[in-house]
Length: 151
Image (tube, rainbow, N blue to C red; front, side, top):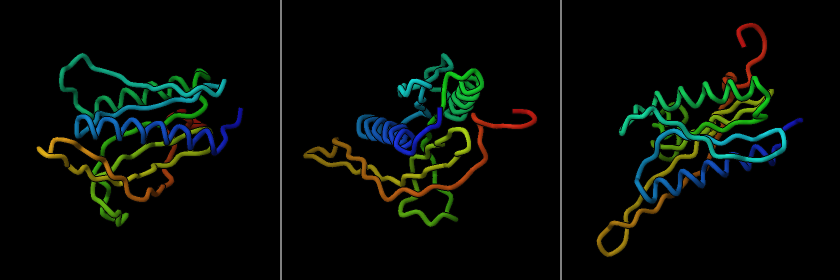
């Protein structure tokens, strides 16, 4: 099954929506993801290490490994791995912090950066609002959908 641009967009929007929810409720988020099944169903994907405050890099690694295993087995035809990052200055992003989504399927692998800021409002400045700037994408080597030797 070929993955359509619309399906990749749905995966991306799923990640943006969840990141917004987490930023507005907690002010931060740990790495998380979403996957597209061969039947076209999107599912949320998370992981844990058993620690109360796990290292985000460890969660990201576990999710990436899980996506690669799922892609090899044919469970996933596309994946989206989201992380809260400092956007590299070389990209000249509108804001320094961002949601980065590694959007991937066979023959397609991009980091999609969505710069954001969290503003506090309300009478006691306790209500958070996440504001996203214009996104941009950077082509990167595939992780989950690698082909060739060592894949």
